[in-house]
Amino acid sequence: MYRQAPRLLIRALDGGRGGRLIGRAFSTDVPAASVEDSAFVEAWKKVAPNLEPPKTPLSFMRPRPPTPSSIPSKLTVNFVLPYQSEISNKEVDMVIVPATTGQMGVLPGHVATIAELKPGVLSVHDGNEVTKYVVSSGFAFIHANSIADIVAVEAVPVDRIDPSLVQKGLADFTQKLSSATTDLEKAEAQIGVDVHSALNAALSG
Image (cartoon, rainbow, N blue to C red; front, side, top):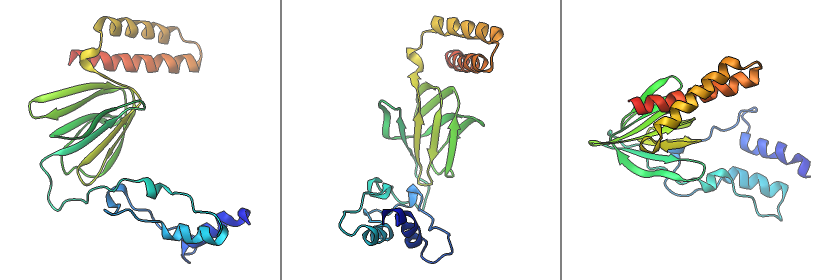
C-alpha cells in the first residue's frame, strides 16, 4: 500500500489537471492565519488512515505580512548565518549586497528578487549609520513586501578584520595560484584570492 503513496498523493494534488501540480504560493502570499494543506491530509488519510499525517513545510512557515498598497518608508532586514542571527527584523533605509551580477542596492518597494552573493561587502544603511560586513557567499531573498532575507555562509564586521593578516593571506594565495598544477589546487587558490581580495577592498573602501 505504501508503495502507491506517491502516486496517490500526486493524483490528489493534481486534481485532474493532467499531471500539472498546483503551484505553491510565494512566502509573501502565505495567508495571515495558519492553514492546513487539506489536499495532502486527504490523500494521506486514504493511504494511511490509522496514522497522523506528517507536518508539511507549510505548517512551519511564519506568515508574512501582506504586500502593502503603498511603498513603506523602511526596509525590514533579516541577516542570518548558519550559527547565529546578525540582524533580525530591523527596519533600515537600504542594504547593498555583493551579488554575482554586481553590487545591488535594495530599497523599500524593491521588486521580488533572489540574488546569489559573491565574496564582498554587505552594507546596511540606517540614517547616517552604515554597518559593513564582509561575506563569503550566500543568497539574498528580496520579497515584494519590502522584507529582505539575507543568508551568508560566513560574515565578519569590517571593523574586526586585521589588515596585516589580509595582506599576508592575499600574498599566500596568489603564490599558491601561480604554482598550482591541478584543477583542484587552482580552484582552491582562486577562492582564497577572491575572498582576500574582497577583504582588502572592504578595508580600502
